[in-house]
Amino acid sequence: MTAVSRPSTAPESRPVPWQVLPPEADLPARLSGGAGRVVPLHNRDAGSDATRLAALVDGALEVVVIGLYPVALLPALLATPGRRVLVIESDPAWARWVRASPIGRAALETQRAAIHVVGDPAVQLWRHFTTGTTPPAVLTHPVLRREWPAAVDAALAIATRAFAGASANEQARVALAPIYLTHTLSNVAHVARSRDVSAFAGAWAGRPAVLLGAGPSLDEALPVLRDRQDEVLVIATDTALRPALAAGVQPHICVAVDASAANGRHLTDLDPPQRTWLFAEASILPAAVRAFGSRVVLFRVAEHQPWPWLSAAGVSRSTLQAWGSVLTTAFDLAVTLGASPLLFVGADLAYTGDRPYCRGITFERDWEALREVGYDDDVIRRSVMRGPLIDEPDIFGQPTRTAAHLVAFRDWLVEHSAACAPGTIINATGAGILHGPGLRQVPLVDALPRGGAPIPSVGEVAQGQAARDDSPGLAAAIADVLWGVRAHDPAADALLASWQAFATERVSRDDLVERLSSVAIEAGFPRRARRLDLRVSGHATAVTP
Image 1 (cartoon, rainbow, N blue to C red):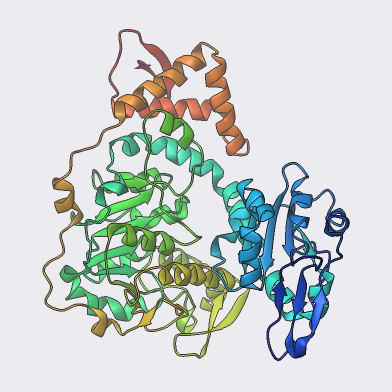
Image 2 (tube, rainbow, N blue to C red):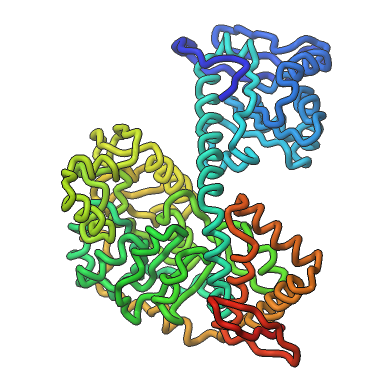
């Protein structure tokens, strides 16, 4: 990150934490420490100090402030149009004072400023950075740096992680934008006719659920779960579905988020049982959606294209949270469904036993093909275990091999688990790094309930609901676009241009038009009196708006 001051390596030697005293009368804000030591943080002329400090980051549109002294620095920074400011404070009382002050309230109301306290949940801080492409300027108060270096280093670490999250999110968005767009367009007929996640909200209130990750520990867990699977709501991530079915476990729900073709293979070339429903982000591989027939519930994880257009057509679906791993979305879904307690199984988030996954996943076919052409297991393992590799304490306090992205997933799950009712989130994985506030560690055999009533299937719950069909609105919206293309309508041109911009110009206009045409034809949308002739896959077809 670009910083006005560098992290200090000096150890924290203060016997008690410092605290910030708010300004009063003619006194400026002061830093108060042990033995009665009090250090002024700015001059009595707070305005001139604010102007001087703001000039240090002149031109930067995203600024991290570590030590907001004086408070007048906040409006001085926000005076630059479009600038966003993230304040990170170590003293909770000072942060509360700033938020409650007239200056603080006015700044927060702009939606361009945020105040974070060291020690508070920080997983969502990355959202404060608009793109993740240009590192923010970091403005560190010199007195704080000198007197309380440990606090500054902790704040810098938070800012660095937040920007890294924004950067990773932006890189993923750019890389996957074309398939987000094209897969969602190909799936829109399924979206329009699928039930919404909200229809199942609270449907399993108070019933236990098991969340299956595909970590190495899943191998030992599946035989235990097999004989008890009717007593819990079994929610499998897409990677874990094939191993679960092979072990005789039939999940009630399979959750998929990743739009890539490689990930879509987890759900194709298998015969999912009638009991298993697919709850998926609408941009997953279309073949994976088709594999589940009508047993599909589609949702979204963001307002990316083409959702604004779909929403305007009356085709809107619920949003579930996602943080880099399908396991995070499966957790959010389980909470939405009302299930409690929630048991994590196979959620190592670490390379337990020097292995990246459980046995039986789709990728094993790829690894076998590599072996056949001469690659040994060590080379294959290193290619799968994405780095840089690090050691983290496992659930027993012993070091285990993992990676930074897996630690980020763990931190997200820990933060959101802590927000649930105490004692309701259980890690029954038996290995790995999933531990922290809000999580209980219980062996699976002890955590599974005994003697409960059978869990209702998704199909049984769905039978009591009215079917949802937004196809008429979608058909009209597609027809408007197709007719607009033929008539060179500026609105249609602008829509297609916005889609291409989202896909970073890696999807052609003709491809977008053909996808919409194919959807209209394959879905059998009703015709009007007038027809629009288009050519799709070499065959003359008629699409009517």
